[in-house]
Image (cartoon, rainbow, N blue to C red; front, side, top):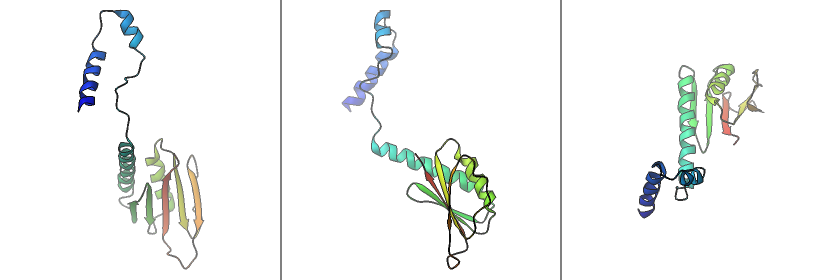
Length: 141
């Protein structure tokens, strides 16, 4: 399109070194006016890709454990089938990186974990509900 064509010409001109140094210094810190801004669709795709990456990393960390990892609407749900809770907690801490995430777990008993640097919520299940733990991982940002 015309805008892409103008963008490419402007980027070529901005990369070339002018003979007049004053011109170079004047335009050095100015933003590129014709640069494309990120659309909402691109932001959504990036966010989904980030969640899919988290899902892949968590599945990789827990591949030998009896768990199911599901991505659903900007959250990860881990259905825990009698795996030790510290194993899942350590896997979540490993994949967290610098992402602002919060973790909620539904179980009959409160897990005995070190709650360092992650937002954590425990929700008690009634005995009639399934005995499996359910971990919910959401973004805080």
